[in-house]
Image (cartoon, rainbow, N blue to C red; front, side, top):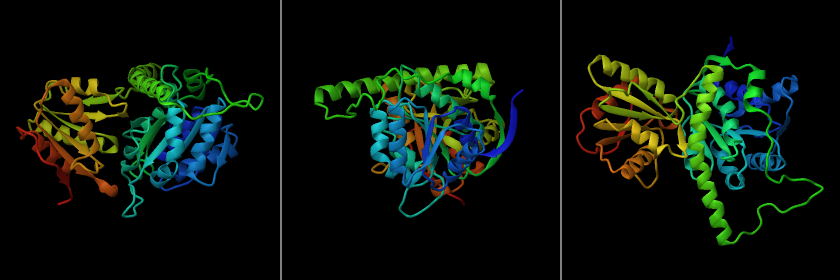
Amino acid sequence: MQKFDVMNGNMAAATGASLACPDVIAAYPITPQTPVVEYLTQFVADGVLKSAMSEVESELTAMSMVTGASLAGARTFTATSSQGLSLMFEPYFRASTLRLPIVMAIVNREMISPQTVWGGPQDSITVRDAGWLQIYVEDNQEIMDMIIQAYKIAENKSVLLPINICYDGFYLSHMTEKVFIPDQNMVSEYLGTYKPDHIILDPERPMAVDPLTNGELLMNYRYLHLEAQQEALRVIEETDKEFEALFGRSYGGLIEEYRMDDAESAIITMGSMTGAAKEAVDIARKNGAKIGLIKIRVLRPFPKDRLIEALEKVNSFGVIDRNVSFGWNTGVVYQETKAALYESGRIIPSVPFIGGLGGEDLTVDMMVGAIGLIGQISENHETVWLERE
């Protein structure tokens, strides 16, 4: 039987990282990510975790450090939020294009301005096209489990890409839940020892990394990068199944479907709002509405085929976005969903919702109202902003 504890999301992330036994950890504190670094530092100080732990002078240095460590063949971990993610953008982009399997937690926080420290995935969504894999989670158990799975995914020889596990600041990072903790020996056996096949940095064999590259070679790099992201779709699904077989928990792989078997309409969510949306679906079902829910777990690469399949029988859908896409009057997940459906050739009436910005709550009542509108539409609807009455 797995032991359990009551912990906040940051402790769940730190515990998951500790169970993966990274060789090198580098991070800089920023609200609401700071406790992740503090917990990991305490694990090292207590002798629970044998890792080289470095609190550097900035997030740019943190990403540069884990990039160098990964190039030297180390398993690495870091974490950040919001402006910290912005500060590390140059080495963040380089880490993916160098194909380094770095695992990084992003404790989602709104971007400035106006200044705010509250939760919202605008930070990670803004860098979704920097070549990393991105997985968004619903609760603290999923945080821990996905930090562990992240190493399995990123280090797969068909993938070899860095990965973000993204979770909502404060709603998850500072809220406590019961979390089952996998056995260390089982996790170590599950992940195995990271043995990179690529040429690694060695002081005895000096080499240039990231030299000036001509267009023909760069084209090949980008092609292989995109192919690896598509391979990740398969690997994520397989990893979920393997994790379930060992630890008894599955999250559906690329997406999670809730009460979709006979659904005539669907609500699409991402992140911690999903709990309230599931409750709203149950309420609507009791009132006779045939509504289901789809939770987007993987934003990059986008799971278009799984999503098209899930929406195959519905007559309408709505997407709740906790972000905005500047230049469009919708959120990003809505745009991604519409793009996927366009490729399928199917036109389904839909409505985009935006809410929960700056840490504002997305309540069950809001979700019930959204579901009511989704069930009534017969053509595309303009964006609806979900606000408290």
